[in-house]
Structure formats: C-alpha cells, structure tokens
Image (tube, rainbow, N blue to C red; front, side, top):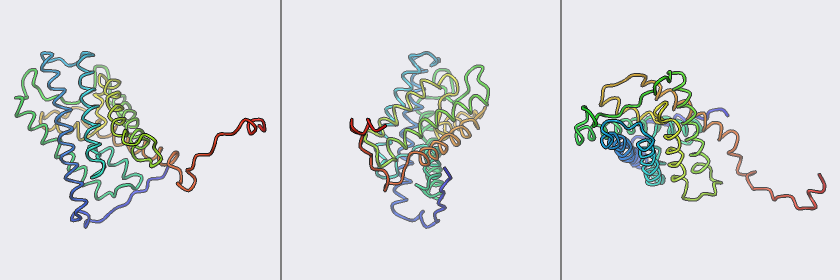
Length: 261
C-alpha cells in the first residue's frame, strides 16, 4: 500500500488537455458548491434560521447527492470530476494524477468554492438571520479529535466508493459510478452532518469559512479529509486493484469439484 506519487512538470500548465481539465474543475466545483451551500441556506431560510431538523438534514443530503452525481458525471471525461481536494490527493497518492496537476486542481477548487459563496452571499444577502452563510462546525459535545476521526471515516467511505465504482476498470456498474458516489455523499451527510458537518471536502468547507470569516476548528475539515481520502485510495489500490494479468474471475467450482474438498 505504498504511495506512488508522480511529480509531473510545470509544462503541464500549458498543455491544452490540462488547461481544459483545470477549467472543468473550476466550473464543476463552482456549481457543486453553489448548489450544496445554497441548499443549506435555503433550508435555513425556510426553517426561519434553523436547519437542524431531520427534514432539513434530509433536504441538504438529497441536494448534495444530486449535485455530486451530476457534476462528477459531467466532468468524468474531461478532468475526472474530482470537485474535491481529498479526491485529487487520493488519486495522486496512487499515481493517477501528477502532484503538479493536483496542485492546479486544488487551487481551481478553492477559487471556485470562494466564488460560489461570494455569489450566494450577494444573491441572498447572507450575513444576517436566516440567510447567514452556513459554515461547517462541530456539533454540540463533539471535540476536535472526534470531529477529525468522523471526517476521516466519512471521506474514507467516499473515496473507497470512488475507487470501487469509478476508478477500478473491472467495475460492473458502468455509467452508474457517479450516481453511486453521490449516494454515498448523501448517506454520509445524514450520518455525520449533526456531528462534524460531514464535509468530506476541504474546498466545500473553505469557501463558506472565507466568506463568513469564521475559522473555528476549520483545520478539522482539512486534516480529516486529507487523511481519509488518500488512505482509502491506498487501501483499495493495494488490496483490491489486482494486476490486470491476474484479474480474470475464476469460475465457481462445480459440484464434483466441491466433493474434492
């Protein structure tokens, strides 16, 4: 399960395919954050300032499920549809993207998140009452250590699904991979939202924190995802991404074969 980092070269920045990929990450992440943060703001607005009910949580989870599924699918053939620095680093850890291109992706993702939140603040008048910018925060009674562990587990789950349903060439789900990834995100929001905020994505947390100027425990939403994501990539790549020369499925034993045991 050793990392397989590839450094890359600065010439990638002028490669047409790389430029298109970075622009795709910028647009895809902008649309993802706009819908994700916007859904949290809309839920809070409709609830009169409180979005901590099961109905509000379900609405936010559903919105994230849908927008992740669509944006990953839309970008899969251009940039890979990462929309998340944790995804980018996880793929870099197994040599599927260079570190140089990873840095360009992450920068685009952070810029896109900031731009999306700035636009949302302008459109909704965020900053007062029900329209306040929703910043990821730890739940009542949840310390930073438990928050980090929660984010590690949730992001591990996300990246394990990415590798199993999108990255692994043997996957049998076809074009369903992005939808399944979206479903994992939604499930994780339901499971971890009340405790850590269920970010799983440093860019998703960065934009609201920057626009709102609220940085309390913000490091949790970097450390957790950036541990959990690469860890999942390394585990899946090391244990389950077998050499394609030996990947053929062996036939199940016949009844006569079973009698030999």
